[in-house]
Image (cartoon, rainbow, N blue to C red; front, side):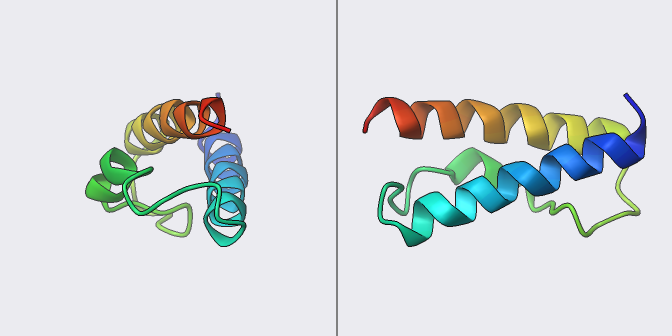
Length: 69
């Protein structure tokens, strides 16, 4: 996958994360691993591998969060 597309996917997932947090579905500990990465879609200087790792971890934590609903 191209870096541009990976960053776009990363951005979409962060928007879902934000929505879950704002709606009260996610709690403060829901995205601990992702937050520890300290990477955001706006950080274009990060490598595609770093964005892939962020997407992977964020996807896992989003899935875990939505399973609890």
